[in-house]
Image (cartoon, rainbow, N blue to C red; front, side):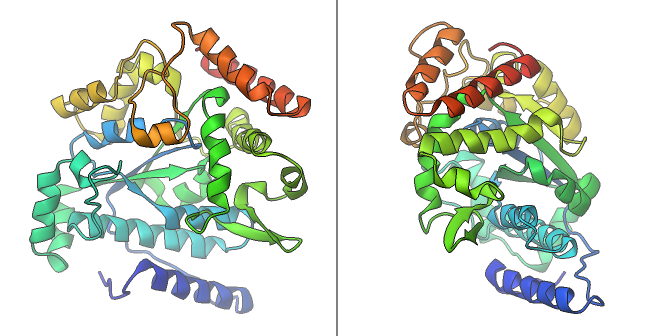
Length: 358
């Protein structure tokens, strides 16, 4: 396999140039028939749903690699969602980047050595990753991947509307796990995200509408977002996402996992993960579950990590799940319009009807 392209930015430029030719010359089709990847598990969900609780547990299964964030794959899906990229380009770019992520992680290239980060090698078998950094790379990696059949592990955001594209690109190699959570538990974090969307740190796709930039999920509803405060924007964007969830407008191969049921009654889900990953339940999985406080008595009894606190996490104030929801609703109701509150109540009821009371 030829990895002569120096970095993913150059790859994007190349693919975009091919995409332009495709739009101006119908004889050009972007293609990638070869695939290094054996399997990839994607842990996906809306911001604040608990992905970084579930991903370390999945990583503890044999052959599953350390969690990685896949911004370029997210960008391909977001561009397709606003009709700004052709199918062949998006599919080929997803396949190329999945191979590149696997190739790099298998030889320790671009490994995250920052101890406090959730994707740090110190959170996942650090000695193994250090050995990879010190070992031979390049051509030797192809044989290692062929023999060991590692499972690439990606943690992604808001890709449920793009599952048909992802399964078309990756086919039977893809295991897509969608973690869902009660809307009232996600609003505070997502409200904070709107400051990030205006920052150069933001890696989500933006587009121009009336000479102003908007984030991809506002497409077609720009003026509604323009008139709303950050809490209302959070509610409208959850509604955009959960309308896909509630209508089941996604690929049928998606495994939907309700956060509340998983953290309280994990056994059936762990057995399912073991089956689809073709990896037995081991001591590492049980140890990581314990570290993540799974199972737990209350859904909010998670780890008190600084990064969670920065995004609005607070320990439970009561020993009653319904009271916890009422406290969150009361807090948010003071900051939003009646229209937004009505929409929030509607989403909450529909979520509870589908996935049971918390």
